[in-house]
Length: 128
Image (cartoon, rainbow, N blue to C red; front, side, top):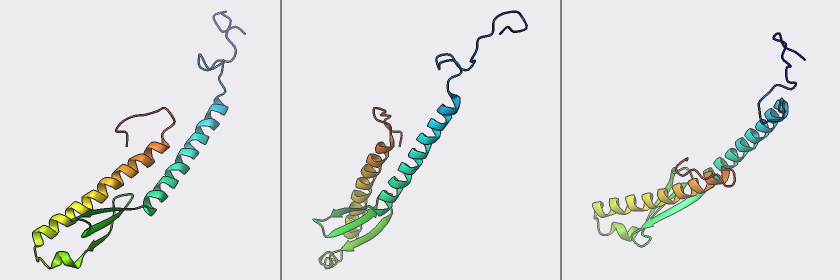
């Protein structure tokens, strides 16, 4: 087939390296499948993080905290023996330490879950 300048027009058009016209419909379907799977995997990850319970403790376990996988504080437990000292500052420090320990663990778990969403061999540090 010739164009208006008399040169032969190549059949197929499309993008170089994609085999002529490339199978754009097939590629679009493949992209949609990948997007759907990523969305489903992300939903499952969110459910796992919501259901996760991660603990942290301080003072030899006298103060304990529990957070979910998203870092939401779920509970704090204080052993009554800690209250006998009536040292509010010490108790505050123990609570902060226990909560931060749980939050650090939750962040590690969340990052591990997010890495599962990445395609094999694709490692982009700090992406999540």
